[in-house]
Image (cartoon, one colour):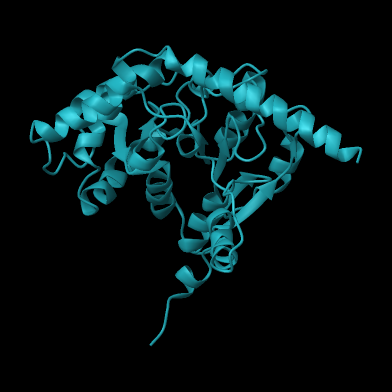
Amino acid sequence: MKISQRVAGVEYAIRDITLSAKKLEKQGQKITYLNIGDPVAYGFQPPENVKDALIKAIKNNQNYYAPSEGIQELRQAIAEKEKRKGLLTTEDDIIVTNGVSEGLEMLMASIVEPGDEVLIPGPYYPPYASYVRLFGGIPVEFGVDLNNSTPDLDDVKSKITSKTVAICFISPNNPTGAVFSEKSLKDLIDIAIKNDLYIICDEIYDQIVFDEKFVGIGKVSGDSPVILLNGFSKVHLMSGWRIGYIAFNDSKKLDILRENVPKLARVRIASNLPVQYAALESLRGPQDYIPKFVSELKKTKRLCHQTNKRNAWT
């Protein structure tokens, strides 16, 4: 009996570390789990209207398989949101996924061949490297000036080879919090266009910004091959419901992906239908809870920072 080398090489340290923590718990030690970025586990909850939308969908017998790409109403609402941020996209360019992670897996499965390289800013969110490796690729880390939230463009250029297929990044970033400026986003797109690379940008934290200004990559995308990932786990406080999406920019260079990635959506059948109606309500319904939620997070951030400063002197 054997296991594939692809799976043997996969790791996700953020969750893998819980295996050791569980052993300590069995020995009687109290463990507080802070390894996952999940505000819903620590006092925050989706608004009541969003919960009601989920319950209503279930009670209205919307419990069957959804269209593989997602229900039309939700894809329309997602396209409207991303167009407001500047992305040239329509409902036909949206694929609803079971979280951003599934969208990332679909994309890596579609663009990475064995030996291909994908550029990722360091420090990076582990699944980006894991999915690259899963499909035989090589994750290549490029530098970021964390004091100024700017990518090291010279480092990016120096690491592009004939095997490079894409530049990936999260902005606002997980785990560093770096928020790329409009200029930085444009510089990365220019590099990608010059080298015929895909740009995969994850904006799951697009409204959770404290001191810096967030600019969506759509504002500077033009007709470049930008693929956006986003979802409802963070801003919309729906982490356990697992729903996200892929949004393709209006670029001829993405036509081959627009044709082929939906095949993977059809293979896995569909995303959770009742949750799609909840996600629709979270986009269409009141948004006043978001600034309140972000304000509470900012207070927590300030307390953590002050505590760390005090500890540094003791």
